[in-house]
Length: 219
Image (cartoon, rainbow, N blue to C red; front, side):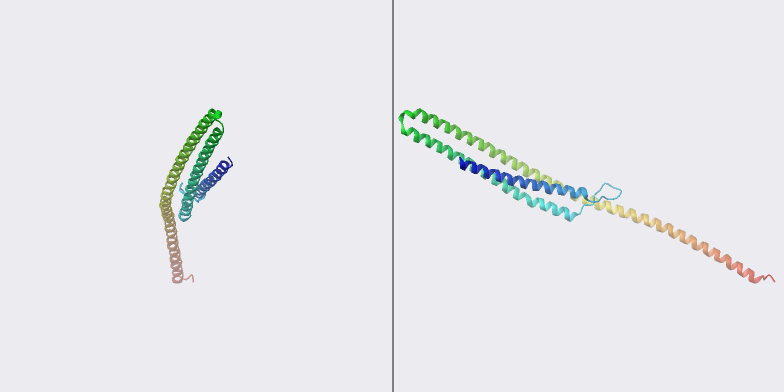
């Protein structure tokens, strides 16, 4: 029974390790979401400027965490199989003890048969429970792996699409800004030309007045 408890404790440790890895993956996904939400937004739009290199590095970090999670999940499966083996061994020990007890006395034949039946029932129950637990664990592992891969692929496609959209939006924004500057410069040039023309007209008028004064002195 102590061996069974030890195997169960090992299984719990492995399950805890897998849980820690799952938490790490969730943490990295949360960081990815925060990275997108905290990125600056493009003015006059709903787009977000995301650092492509930082985003791809974060995706690589998540991708590298997946194999460890799979290995730890497989370790849990092996621990469950060890528990099943230990339970089967204990069932065999129960059967052996019952046989030894029956061999000591013919009168205990009925007791031996009952013990054998109980041991066989116990063994079958353990086999069935372990088989069901193993199948459930494998199914959950496959589902988690497929779901994680799909989520990562969707995040990658979304990030690439957003980066392309952000680039297009940035180009449009820069074109609008430059066009506005061009209009402002054109208006400034028009004002400057008008000012120079006015100055030239004023200068011509002064020159004419001066020449007229010289041509017709008051004395």
